[in-house]
Length: 182
Image (cartoon, rainbow, N blue to C red; front, side, top):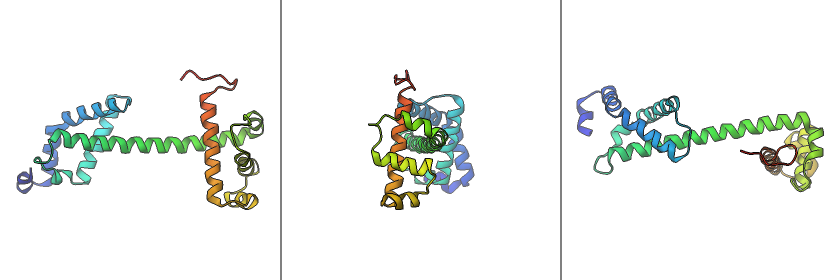
């Protein structure tokens, strides 16, 4: 591989590599998606292929590949797996941020009625105080921390924990206390 690098321009090397190994990379993507029980369709495979290709080019991985250390298929598998893991982490982070935002908006809009239906054992007294101050009374984290004699980071942490508990509870149980079927 290194001899090829000396004889050809970089763009030609990458072009040849992807022409020769597109099927292997796509089969590996499907294999890794199955491992993670992820949805598989041609659009997702193509998007992940683009991410893998960009990662290989951006990080100049072809220059770093050594056939004495690993088979090409193993090397590609590692790159594909790390790319998919990175992508899943980004999706999870985005999903969590979206859920927090949506749930906070929902709690803010319906807090007066929701507060009455929160099981007493679900949140600690302190978590309930923090939600009342930051959501109902619209105090900033700093203001709530001053009122409660806590650090700002403690208030943020307890608010996050309370919202997570509420989100988990209300996604697990319906409004009548019964479990959802999913």
